[in-house]
Image (cartoon, rainbow, N blue to C red; front, top):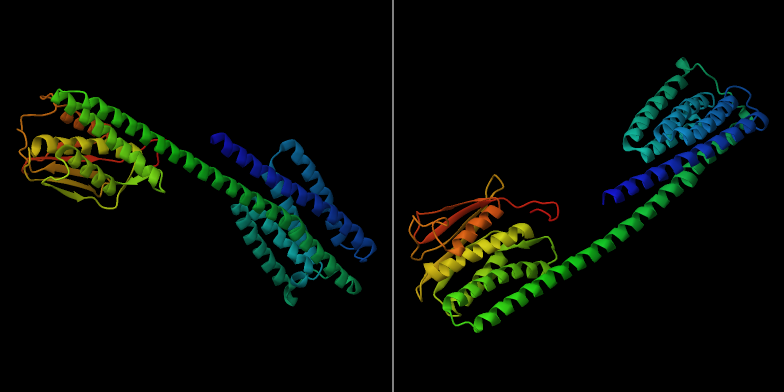
Amino acid sequence: MHRQKERQVEERLKDKAKLIIKVNYFSSVFSLLFFFTCLYILDIKIVIPYVFLAFGILNLVNTFLYKYHKNLLLTYNTVSIMTLAGASIITLYSGGINSPFIFVLALIVVAGYVTTKSYGSIYLNLNLLIIVLIYSQSIADFSFVNNVVPENSRNLFALLSILFSVYLLGGVFGKNLLHAHHNLYKTKNELEEKIIEKETLIKEVHHRVKNNLQTVSSLLSLQSRNIADKEVKSLLKSSQNRVISMAMVHEMLYLREDLSRIEYRSYVQELAEYLIRSIKGTSSNITLDIDIPDLKLNIDTAIPLGLLINEAVTNALKYGIVDESKGEILIKLSKDEKNEYILNIGDDGVGFPETVSYKTTNSLGLKLIHNLVRQLQGSIKRDFSKKGTHYIVRFKSIRNQVSPTT
């Protein structure tokens, strides 16, 4: 990715260099032609032809020097300053504010914006100041130069000046800018195609991961059928549910347009209902109280949090709300002003003593809950103010270099 960006920058610099060098050559050639035209056709003998001659020669030298120092900004600023000076002098000696050559000043502004926005702004303000000064000296009381273009040559001089301006603006700048626009449009289409292709591949990956996890779940289910030991069978069933909770995340990413994040309320609802059916059967006395706003979590946060919810709900259904008793499971997820997520999860079952913790028990579920909290880089505490077993988990969205963040 870094090399690709470097190549794009190099290509843009090459395009700028080609444009500026091309403009330099054209303007130099036209300036030399103007020199001969002024002397031998327009009969202009004072100042103007020699300004054209000086600009044409100096700009050719400036352009040739670029091949050695390769400093594009130096080349551009040199020609811009020469153009400003030359165009201002020619404008003053060919009619002042009424001179058709004044339009050449606008070309410097266009070239500035092609190079960089900052240079375009600088030359725009400088040109505006020069135009105001030219207007000021054109007022009778302040005029210190005269129009040296003969009366009978002024129309032809105006025609050549305008043709020169229009050709450079349209024939050189216009063509190159249009070419650049087409290249950008082509690049944009190529990038869009690559993005669509990448999204398709990512969807396929999520689909295959989901299928593989479901295969593992099916194998665990088949294995459990051949085991008579209820405790081992229960362990396999718990493992199967953990696999299913991960498979659900990949399934939701596959089915939705957003490939980086999932809507967590629908995921938790589906997971909790599946666990109730799996553990308590289709007809149970369990009530679900899910309070989750419109939150979307990335896969690196969604999977460990889903496993944590899986363990908490599983423990509640197995040990909190015993047998066929009525019970309620609360799952609430919110976000505070510090951009932290707060998960309140628990049940109103029989609970367990305060002295029991993941450190003092052999319960795999409790140990997994605390391990998953560490994976989320969060904190967990038990809420003893409510009946049953309730936890308060605080965490932030896991950010890494691969997955987008919430």
